[in-house]
Length: 163
Image 1 (cartoon, helix red, strand yellow):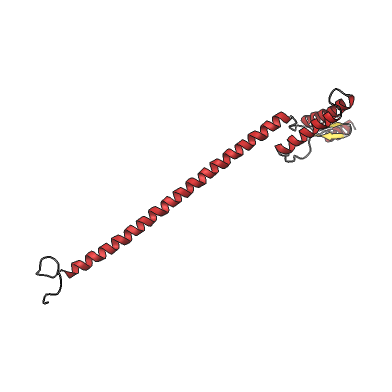
Image 2 (cartoon, helix red, strand yellow; image 1 turned 90 degrees about the vertical axis):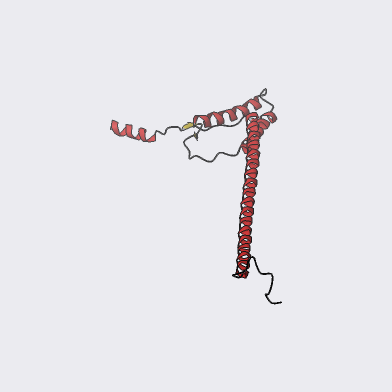
C-alpha cells in the first residue's frame, strides 16, 4: 500500500510547473515569443496602467505593479524569459532595425555586383562571338583571293588576261 501511494505522488510530480492561486505556471507547450515591438508596447501599457492607478506611491498603483511583478516572477520561475523593461526593449528594437537596414544594404550591394558580373560576362561572350564571326569572314575572303591567283603568274590577277 505504501508503494502504491508513492507511485501516485510521483506521477503527479511535474518539474518546472508552479501553482500559485490556482494558476499553473511553466511547463506549458512553448509558444513563439511575441515580437520585440509587441513586447515593448505591452511593457509601455503596463507602465501606463501603473501610472494611471496613481503610480507606485499609491496603494492602488502598488497593487497593479505587484500584480505585474508576480506574473513576471511566475513566468521566470517556469523558465520563460520575461522581457518587460521598456528601455532595453526600445534599445533592442532600434538595434534590430539598424541590423535589418545594414543587411538590406549588403544584399542590394551583392545583387548589384552580381548584375555587373553577369553583364560583364555577357559582353565578353558577345565580343568573343563577334570576333569569331569576323575571323571566319576574313578567312573566307583570304581563301577566295588565294583561289584567284593563277599558276605561272606572280601576285594576284587584276582582271581578265585579254581585255
